Amino acid sequence: MKKLAAEFFGTFVLVFGGCGAAVLAAGFPGLGIAFAGVALAFGLTVLTMAYAVGHISGGHFNPAVTVGCATAGRLPWSDVPGYIIAQVVGGAAAAAVLYLIASGKADFAGVGGFATNGYGELSPGKYGLGACFLIEVVLTAVFLIIILGSTHRLAPVGFAPIAIGLGLTLIHLISIPVTNTSVNPARSTAVALFAQTGALSQLWLFWVAPIIGAVIGALIHKVLLSDD
Image: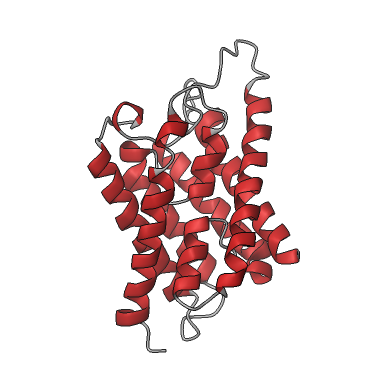
């Protein structure tokens, strides 16, 4: 239960911090943090939560990471369903709190896209399905390689959360214009539940592509990059 609580809490903070930055701060008149600020917010949530609760559960906060770690032999497959449920519920709880806060604005007229991910008309840069699928697969694979490499027994001790957090920041800097950056099905699901767009109809991509990418990244690390 402590592991599941850690995954719930870490995913809650990731969604609340990252998506909250996008919804509340990115476009604030005159002082908006824009893409770079949102990218840093996502990276900081993972970095801080990895230090805070990573020692309890491994600090996944992401169904794709959980599947990738199981593929790499870092997590028993029997733990995967519980982790994913805790992550999805934690993310949804954060999105609900964020919705309540956003709706408290004096001129509130709806949450609109609510930091959701999408392709085609729902892509920030209007990128097509193929491009969005490909970038989610590639960047999730890269993310898993960063995670598995930085947490390897021969890696410098204590620095993994920094590498992982900066890695996620870099991933967002690359892909926010394309898909608004998922690489995390729990994050995508959480905000899609409250969005006023067709985000739910496109949610399948942000489960399938990140999980495929995570498995690819885990296999690349296991076969080509690890000396285990």
